[in-house]
Image (tube, rainbow, N blue to C red; front, side, top):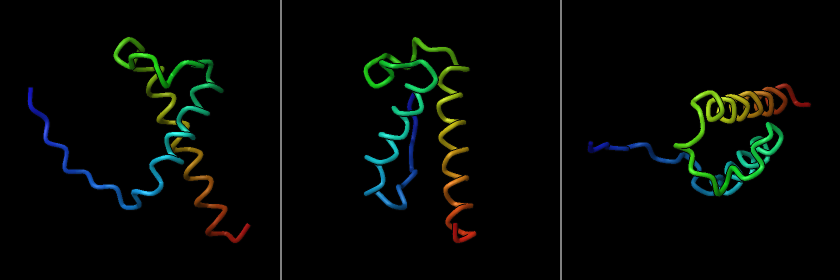
Length: 69
């Protein structure tokens, strides 16, 4: 199966910070070896939790920034 991924990073410099956040959240969720584990061996729920919490935290950060807090 061929997949075309045309997504481009808006701020490529943020990649390291986002990866760091991802591993931190995974660790908080009890997935301490998330960086080295084969993500295909995790359940969709486990992977979804990491992405969902990342999104939640990023939205909270943006709301704080927009509100001036």
